Length: 84
Image (cartoon, rainbow, N blue to C red; front, side):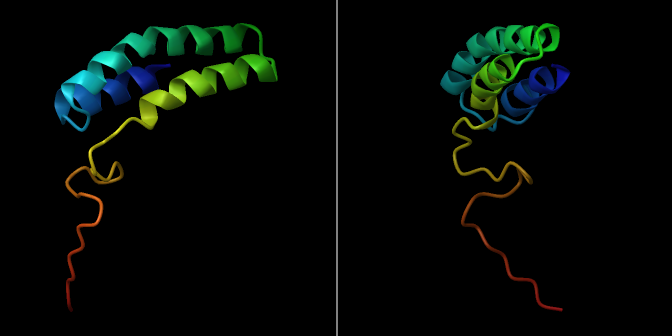
């Protein structure tokens, strides 16, 4: 559960990977995600796990505006050639 809180803070507050309107929507989704995760822990059925995944995945797959999430310094399609 901490992962999703941290990830949203990182992508919205610390590095502005997501724009402000995206962040507003995702911050509304975060409590629902955390509730679904908690329910999946309490009642560990596939239905509850899938429900948690479906909601929480939105936090990870929002529009990053061509930012490469593995390296936020880079943009999609930006290629730099380094010769040895």
